[in-house]
Length: 243
Image (cartoon, rainbow, N blue to C red):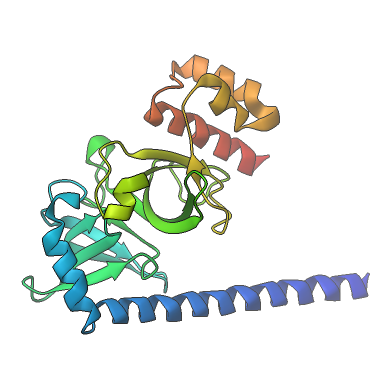
């Protein structure tokens, strides 16, 4: 019994050490990506692309309040953010000099929020997180996706991708965003395109499909509405974690 307890404790220490090492690696890599994006000549080229692709911003392209979520675990409110979905690039105003901005490519952030903190319903911040995505037969790539489910790391995650197909290659904002689904707990498992239908949605839940169908019926939720499907997945995520 003592040997078993010792081995369990040793395993937990090793897991914690591995997680710490991965975290340190992520922080170092994020800092390198950020530094490269904000140092000549890279920053000149990126800013030229931003000026050239003025129509590819999420929203109207104006700066709006939000927050950065960095790999060191910090939540940093920012007075002005704007996200160019086609270029996968976030531009943030400097906290002191609003005429100066910083560039944050995919990989430099754990995520960002667009909108005032504390907003509810339609006024709630839009949450963007970096995730691997796989579209069609092409390989995987890392993108900022807008998370629709209540938590970023639940068993299942539903999200919008705003740059896909030929639009992604051309650095444009897609006219029709692509709905994605996949694991929220396995960051190395790519999210995949998802067509809404009752059969497809219920298939996500395996043996709990009937329970989720009854929940959808009781709440009058529709399988062809992304917001409703997100609520069904949220319910599944709570049940899956508890049980």
